[in-house]
Image (cartoon, rainbow, N blue to C red; front, side, top):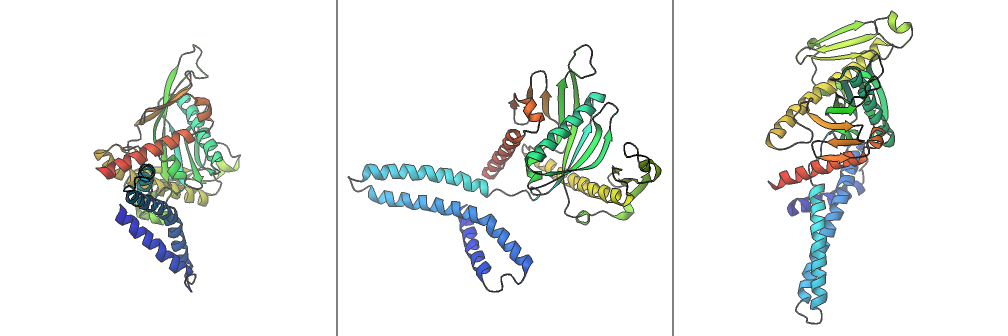
Length: 354
């Protein structure tokens, strides 16, 4: 680890010189890359310098041990510096962990009603509100991409795009099966029902072209949209359905009156879904060798239960139970997402030690 940190410290010095040199801004793309790299390395190297200082303090204190008058003071200095070094070493290990290249990407969030009929669709609506409120707290944009409303409210399926800083990093552990236990509004006997929804969090591709999609492998159908939107929405073939023949992935989009815009939105979702399939294949290989919070790629895997009568939420992957369901459903997901991220970080650190 120390050899790697020495290399990074030298690289930071090199970047300082390059950024201050004449003509540094001649190539703005190169300049932006260097400033971004400098910003990433700065905090890490500063921490490393603190580690080196603590190590130097130990060396100095050890020289003082021979002096009887300074022995106790030197011993205290050594213990204090060793404690600092231990803390700094853990922080450095964390900062050296490999970064997820998708962490800063925007996402497509897809929620589908599962078992439970109308109650499942209502729960899908509750989940959408929960994530939307969380997005508001993080000052992210929420854009509706596609929705299929159920008769009693809620959604059979809904896809939204979340745009902002670090969206995927905060929500990437949300994919999987979400189970709810509560008394439905339509239940006259007061019995608790169990229903479920599946959530998929898909990082957005930078450009649709980034994902290899052969136009000859697409079937594109247009049809008249249904649902809200006035008379116009039902008079033109503005809705678009795209089928990716090799994978069988189907994307429908009808929220805009423009067929062109619906097709563009559907292509973006298709690219994200294909990218997601590739990610899940990779994650499945990882899960075969070690526990992975992002899962094995099986969307039916139950990750969480929301128990309304008891006011609790349980995440089964990390055995975390919080008795603050009202706050969670109102978008206060910080404690949960932080706990999941911390567990994933611990898992990566353990893998490094293997």
